[in-house]
Image (cartoon, rainbow over all chains, first blue to last red; front, side, top):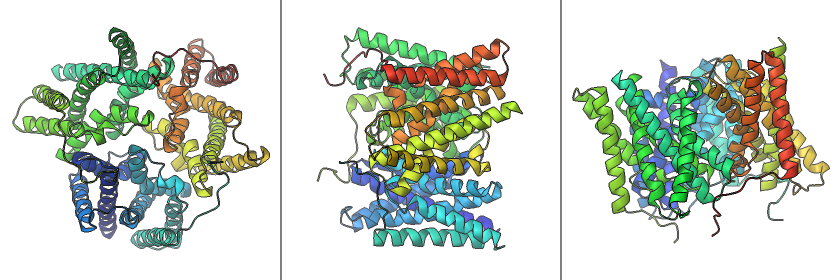
Amino acid sequence: MITENIFFIMNIIGLLAFAVVGALKGIKKGLDLLGIIVLGIMTALGGGITRDLLVNTIPYALRSPNDMGVALIGVWCAIVIFKVFNEDVSNKYIIQIPDAVGLSAFTTTGAMIAYNFDVSFFGIIILATLTGVGGGIISDILLQKTPSALTEDFYASCSIIGAIAFYLAILSNLSLEMSAVICSIVVLMIRIVAILCKWSLPKFYSEQK
Amino acid sequence: MITENIFFIMNIIGLLAFAVVGALKGIKKGLDLLGIIVLGIMTALGGGITRDLLVNTIPYALRSPNDMGVALIGVWCAIVIFKVFNEDVSNKYIIQIPDAVGLSAFTTTGAMIAYNFDVSFFGIIILATLTGVGGGIISDILLQKTPSALTEDFYASCSIIGAIAFYLAILSNLSLEMSAVICSIVVLMIRIVAILCKWSLPKFYSEQK
Amino acid sequence: MITENIFFIMNIIGLLAFAVVGALKGIKKGLDLLGIIVLGIMTALGGGITRDLLVNTIPYALRSPNDMGVALIGVWCAIVIFKVFNEDVSNKYIIQIPDAVGLSAFTTTGAMIAYNFDVSFFGIIILATLTGVGGGIISDILLQKTPSALTEDFYASCSIIGAIAFYLAILSNLSLEMSAVICSIVVLMIRIVAILCKWSLPKFYSEQK
């Protein structure tokens, strides 16, 4: 009961956040209204559909009208945000903060589904990470950008660390709900600190040389 | 019986049309013969495989030799079209018209499959739209273009309107075959008018500024 | 028993090879450590996950910890290779040779899975080819390059020829293991000869004109 509620809430938070991210990226790219809506929906639904396909269930987004409705509300929020910020989308945080929220929420839903399907430790990590970063990768590929999951050090790795925290919490006999909450807090906190502190790791090779 | 025939015919029309589209895009990009064949096949099979994966069935394209054979005929047609037009592929309609036909046919197959699997209203729209636009998105991603589904106003939205028409037809107690035919006609007509009239919506933000 | 061993070995060879390919491409692109790891893992796991999704099984990579562990070893190998070659990744062979090995190994696993699921002749070809080229396509899309499967004549076609050889071997009443070995040798030999001899086919149209 509580578990389903937490999954339900996390899913809605993730959908809203990624719809905002996708729509704002589309606005920034200069797409028109329908392009923005399509990109917002695809970004929002992408991660969850990937998650459901990987465990062989018919995607929840196909069975329920809720997901697409929530995604549309997210697109509407993005337009409001865009107007509130006086049409200035050069401020990176406008996209990065909802992106961090979505990453955290979807990573948690991925970990919860993985737990339900009784996959291995690495399975939990892979499913949580792909669910978390899936939406962002889809929107970046559609807009022909190199995905953040590859170029930002602490993006995919936040999901990985969150999934490990989830696993350790489950091992410590914490309840599934508690573990889910811990997972989402860990991902969100690390990601936001990484954004604010501009954490990065050294590169091996510089393309320009 | 009739239903299966309509599905079968729509599927073949869609495969042929998208194989032509994919192969012509490959020719325009300067790929050589095998690249053109691979792109034509992927564009043709992409939408259907996406559709079958989403409802958890082994893709029809894997179980039957027909789909790939039809795709190869489509690639052959593309080469003939290319020669007939004196190797001039700058005329946009050469690609846009078969693309509209494929969009219409695959949207209809997606809607029919969604009906069979008894998904919700939004499920029908999502499945019909992803099936319709899937092939084009795959070919555009492979050729590093921003997909038409994002940049053209009346592309994905034609599929959405067609799926709504399909749903209303079913609700009005029309037969599945009749609803499918209505869906395909609605998509095709709106898409062709949108191409000819260059319909577009205002943008929020211009990337160039 | 032997069959499982051959599948297991081919899978590990493919994972290792594609993890090396993905990580080296990431190093060349100037990604930092975590980007390289993510790209290496996605390239390595991509083909196999595609294969398992297409036949509707929960991906092996989710159920077993082995796959991701092997991919991490591959990423480590890539860094060693990069250092051994004095940080000079301009030599094409460094990436092309492991890529050919991975193509061969994954094509074979795709053909074996297709055989197990009793799909048609064309199904074997499609599944073997998509499994073989899947990882490379994913890494090229993520790095915004036009995939080798489209631009190189004898890339996807090596998989196709290997799958046909596999089918003919099965038809000739050879054992599944023998057919798998033949398939992998055919793919690897054709691909390496194609790389060394720079085989190519004429183009229809030059994009530059």
